[in-house]
Image (cartoon, rainbow, N blue to C red):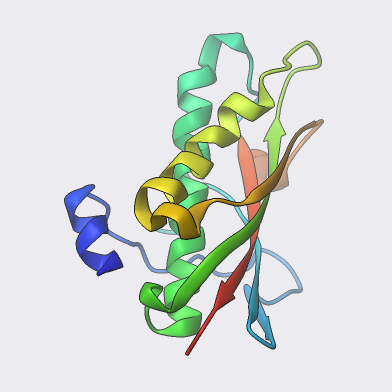
Length: 151
């Protein structure tokens, strides 16, 4: 059912990115799945890099959406099916922004909106969106997630 929704939205899940450090991409405990921070990677390359400012807000939103797509890819790798998701519990969004930029919530909304669109009520979640001085591999955004699932 979720796979059909992704097709309707024109989203093809990539191979989930491999960690860029000494950690695992996901951890299960009970019925919770913790997804490590995902950056906007595609085919092994960061596709949105640099500082976010008022001048590139739309690009930063595309970056956040790519992070969300990579979260979905990690969920599917771990659970086998996105239909197992019973709730998107929380997102933590980090934006590599200039000191004067204060629209981090607008950037991370692109990820939140995608989860709402795909999962409906199950996609509504708690969230933080913060600006940071830098992110790994100079990516524009990084988002991690806590997912509730049933099997």
